[in-house]
Length: 259
Image (cartoon, rainbow, N blue to C red):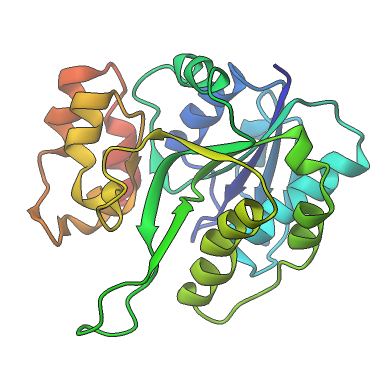
């Protein structure tokens, strides 16, 4: 399978962190080309990417991850890159704690047109009293699209119409939730790697330890070590959990979270 990965990056210090380099090197094992798109005005250590990324786009576009996905996808089209699958991946996760190739092998056996690692069955809550709306969607930190999707007019039109949105809620509703539902309505079939906790609102936050321990889930959201507390309570045990199942260098997480 020929794969092109579009990697969305942003850093408050205009810096490519070591955990990002580790992630990119792991992606390089399963992807032929990597297009690195940074929503920064400059990158102070861009040279560190020279042997990893095949293409770079560095500009402060203020369209967040989906704006980076858009720019990377259009570049892949302009360059006439050959591929069977295109990945949309962002830097909001630490990892992978396990090899990615077995995940792709498993997902190749599924009859689907696009897939992700996890699904969230709910939209955003309008207020505290109102339950969230039932809006199943593949979460956008790691998405894989087969060529028939990428070649479709519905997908291309969606990509070209990505623009700056004022709030995170608008981004989630219009692009993360919107993309899954648009493709499904167009007849494309989705799939997920771990579907066990789709009934849980954002399982990446509330079920992170079970995902890693029980399902060899490869990632931990960066917000967990950075924030230190989730709605489920203290989560300061992330380090021993990861070290008990993986050889991943957890100092990369500590270093980034501290910065």
